[in-house]
Image (cartoon, rainbow, N blue to C red):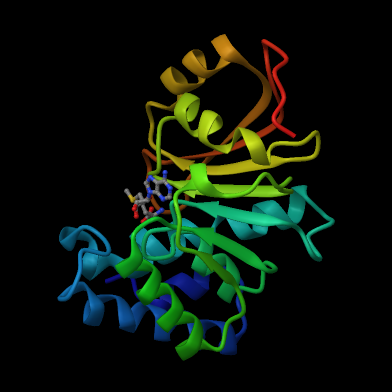
Length: 213
Ligand SMILES: C[S@@+](CC[C@H](N)C(=O)[O-])C[C@H]1O[C@@H](n2cnc3c(N)ncnc32)[C@H](O)[C@@H]1O
């Protein structure tokens, strides 16, 4: 069984952070009976499928993006908080989670209160967010890359980096996205899933040169 101890063997976190992640992990099944937060089939694998899957991007982002001090960090389609809430609990900075589902936002607010974490929850559609340049944009299971870039276009500046948790068919998404977008891409293997891929996408520019900000 992969639990919090196994998680801590893979991700370097303080005891306090692990405790806060545990509070989050314990809240998930309690709220799941009231609303569909994550797939039921993953509830007995929270630490691997959700915590580790999300947390693994933090050391990578810290390594590649040294100015992590106070980035504008948007987590799009956060759902039950993956990866945005995990990033916030791990002290990644003032993460802003954008989630259109009001019930899920109630859960996210409860996690913030119970874990004493600071982060912002935007209960709205991404399309209704104001234009704002982001340093870091994270997302998991929100949309295929071409659609995701369209959704996020108003947050993209020259310094914006996307860190996306993807499956193995990421090559197809990349092929399609590069029809419309210039970008630099790195693919990292996932620690939590042999088929998972972590995409780092930067220097994103629309090929037609249209701008929103
Ligand atoms: C499949 S879930 C993934 C949730 C989470 N990122 C995860 O991996 O567990 C996608 C989430 O994005 C939200 N979502 C989808 N389209 C959205 C939009 N246009 N604006 C804001 N949230 C959206 C949905 O409500 C849902 O909670």
